[in-house]
Structure formats: structure tokens, C-alpha cells
Image (cartoon, rainbow, N blue to C red; front, side, top):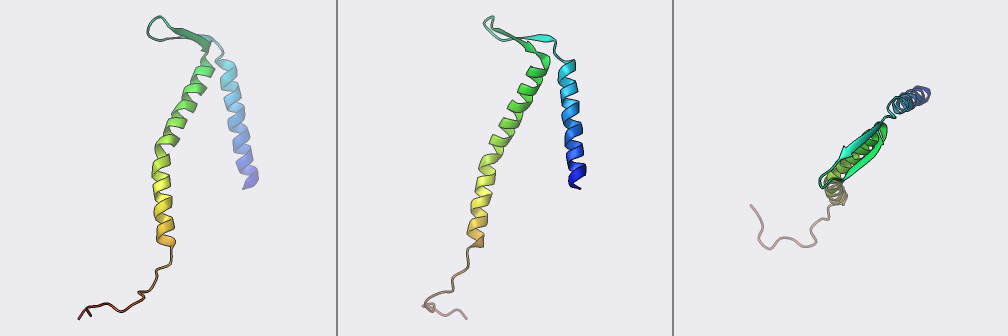
Length: 90
């Protein structure tokens, strides 16, 4: 299974390198106020992909931390009551 995982990773890496080699044409990205940046297409694609992944991870951080806190609270042992109740329940 480990060999298969590494084979898939290697194939994906080779495909990404081939994709990058095919998309080296310069692309101009124009913003407001006559601001324009020029870079290879593959750089823009990978950059915006990484930015989207960063936004996705940052959106999940608060949920994951809240769930971890809840799990740690739920894993604590339940303490038995130390004194009998004042009013017995019948």
C-alpha cells in the first residue's frame, strides 16, 4: 500500500510539473487604478489555489478548536456527588 501511495504522489508531481512547463506564457492581471501585475500563468494558478486553500483552512480553524475543546470536556471522568442531596427525589 505504501508503494502505491508513493507511486500516486510521484505521478501527481510529474503531472503538475508538466502542467507548469506548458503554461509559462506571461499573463497580465489588471487591478483598479491602473495597477497591473505580469507573471506566468502557472504562477497565478498555483498562487490563487494556495490562497483558496489558506482561506479554507482558516475558515475551519475555529470549528476544529471548538470541537477539540468539547471532546476534552467530554473525556473528563464524571465525579460522583460528594454529599447526599438535601431533598431526596422520590
